Structures are given as C-alpha cells and as structure tokens.
Image (cartoon, rainbow, N blue to C red; front, side, top):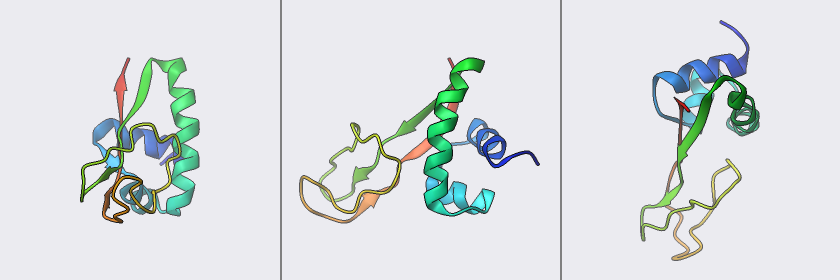
Length: 95
C-alpha cells in the first residue's frame, strides 16, 4: 500500500482528482489532504514530476481562484458572493 503520500502520488499519476475524492480514496480527513499536497508538490521536484491543478471556479459567475495558494475550499466567491464553487482538481505530470 505505501504511505498516505505515496498513495496520493500514485492516484494522481493515474487520474485528475479533487480533495474530497482523494480523502475518500485514501481514507483520511479532507483537511489533511491539503497538507499532504503541499509537501508532495515540493518533493516531486526532485524526481522530475510536477503537481498541477485546475483552480476552484465559481459556478455562478465563472470567477477563477487561480491565485489562491491554499488548498482548502473557499467559502464564497469574492466577485459575486455566491457559494456554488467547483472544486479544484489535482494531477501529476512529468516535467
């Protein structure tokens, strides 16, 4: 099986997943996944892999949270104040 981080890396090399899907597949809390993703992003540089993502996006107005550095879910859109936010998805690709 490997460590939690090894499991996350293996899953993200196969398909694009969001934090909720990762937490269910690896069986950890959603908040813990964000911490693991930050560490994975830093450690992949040494093996010529890169952690990429598609940012959170407001479903009401289309605002993209592309400058957001935190991996936790935003509560509301800063543009329209709507709360229908599409989850960010993560995947791993070779450099």
